[in-house]
Image (cartoon, rainbow, N blue to C red):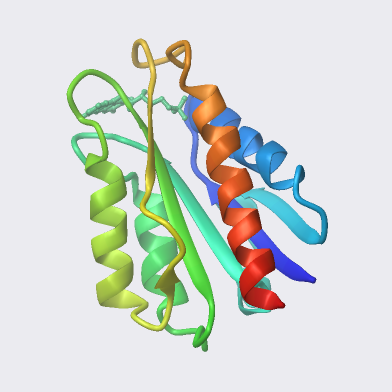
Length: 156
Ligand SMILES: Cc1cc2nc3c(=O)[nH]c(=O)nc-3n(C[C@H](O)[C@H](O)[C@H](O)COP(=O)(O)O)c2cc1C
């Protein structure tokens, strides 16, 4: 059974809700084991047990926050050959995909063994504290479902 961990940082709860909704989408597909953790709770020693790692961050100052960046740098030291990743962010105004692209670039540089499952998901919030813009949450569910389906196919 494919095992997935979704890790995130969230100051006001919006990125957390995105992470939870991605999980909800993944659970629509049978045969995928999912775990969700806030980055500060992650047991780093267990990361290499997962087949796929999803990393989420709010956009702060045009890029990901510190914990996801540190996490990416740390996992680069683990044996990750054959493992997969995808990223997601939340943003306001015109910063669509900015944090996502920076995380993808950082992973490619620091943890090159990890292969990307699908391009990152960027979710718009209405203001600093949210809420998430209408119509955005269904995208999270779809994203989760798509990833789970892909994992299931590739683990057969
Ligand atoms: C210190 C700070 C800086 C921010 N800078 C940006 C920014 O440069 N671009 C942007 O789109 N959103 C920016 N935001 C808005 C965040 O993206 C928004 O608060 C976040 O998506 C909410 O997610 P959370 O509830 O998970 O914390 C900033 C927010 C904070 C608190």
